[in-house]
Image 1 (cartoon, rainbow, N blue to C red):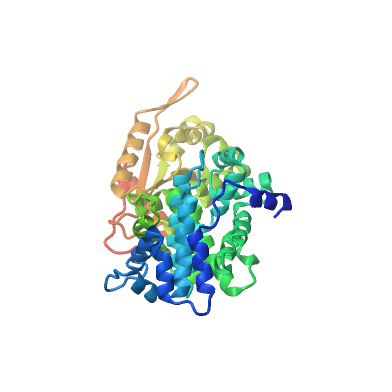
Image 2 (image 1 turned 60 degrees about the vertical axis):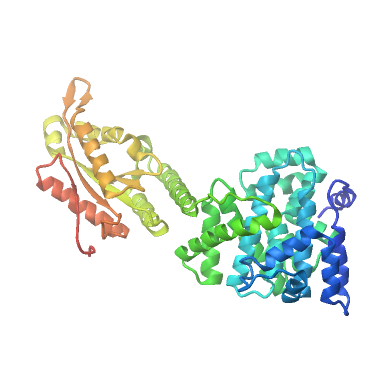
Length: 483
């Protein structure tokens, strides 16, 4: 970190110093002859801290079978090392909350801190880490550098926070404006406060754990990094990227599949509601993890569609004009949607009836013009998160995201009727057009679960519509899984 910024941090008078009781606790537990009764007398001088420690020992963090009512008993059960970490964290958090941060998004900041602390504790327990309390308090204090930067540059930092859409954006903006991000500043502040390495290192490297040489401290930094991403799930508008990172971490470090990682988020959400009162902070306990996951999955699909559309537009100018992607793009997007989300999706396969007859009567140019004009009828059906594609020379396909079989049939029928009732005008020529539509879906009534199954089912349904006389909508329904 630049010397000028470090000196400014040292000279900053508006940032709280390390609380007196925390300093005394640190000094006391360093003594080789420190005893629990001495520690109890010291902590008792701060009723708020004593209350928080009692609440903690009786919380779901430790899941004691019997309630502990005496401070001395609580300290004995926790041990000197744990008490030191908890006392430091609670008293420091209390002091930092009193920081006069006019204009700073204090409520949003502390909510993120609580979710981060809860996630760090939950992950550390899952990984059977011995330093549970260190993970918990480090998770709570990882973003303390944000408070420091605001104290040093209040107006500039408020403006910077307004520009940052995500926590990741904030890091880049901090580095470009101040020459250091809040992790580095937080690490410098932890050194000024003389915090133990088990807290100072994760604070300084929670965005760069690979730079930590000590394996135990690196593991703490890694936990704080992914804990911060867990917090982003609950406080940022778009959770898709954070959820993907958590799932990758869960697969690599915890041997968890996607559903189990999603269950971990449920646990973090529930525990955050229990832990937040320890810091006199309110979190939104009405947040539905299921709703967050649904929105995140929609975002993933939308990002995929946008990327695929960009690729398709670069490769096929003709398709760019009519807003369609190619068959390969559709199949890849469908496969990803079915793999990454548990929600139902539907596929419409559409063919123009009697296209060869139209070509025979009016010429191939008119037949080609009919195919070019038909996507005009797709309208909302082709808009994100849905996707429309040129499936074959005479066929189109529409992926309907988050749509069950019943809704897909209704939309297909509405599309068929609209096309039937809207003949196409070409100069002095009017051409009546009809379509046949095959429908397949992945809802609870359907055995189709993979992209090839769904595509085959839609083709068979389209064949059924043709055999029924064309200008029809049909859906394939099987009692057994498709081959």
